[in-house]
Image (cartoon, rainbow, N blue to C red; front, side, top):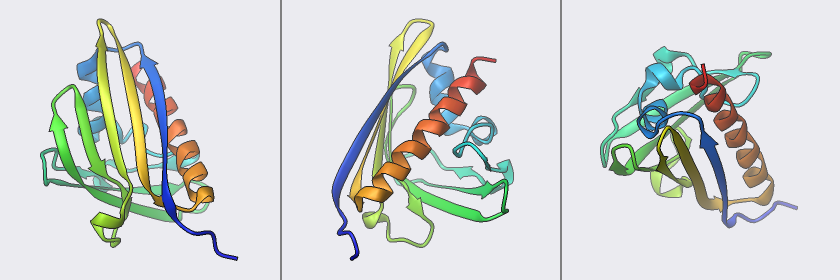
Length: 150
């Protein structure tokens, strides 16, 4: 039996020991994102990343599973950009219609030398896909926290 895709969402909240501008830049500068983009066991080469960070601008990245070399090309469109405060963008497999992709909202809350990042994803997904995405994004964020603490 195939599971039906329904509107599902999750939120991940993390506090970084880094200023808000640096945390925001880790999401908007491919030179930074290449260090953490992807869950454990994946690499995202800088050459595969392009971020046109403006409303209507497109982004893309290709994660490569280290053990198998399998490629996962994702892309989306920025819907809202408030520098150092908020990003809203679609996220999904390249080739899927943008309106069918989940939407991610990231709020960057200034705590002085620390930053609270609130990551929220919503989209039409089967439950097993949602759980996999939540785990994958949690690992990505963990990797970004490690990268920014260097």
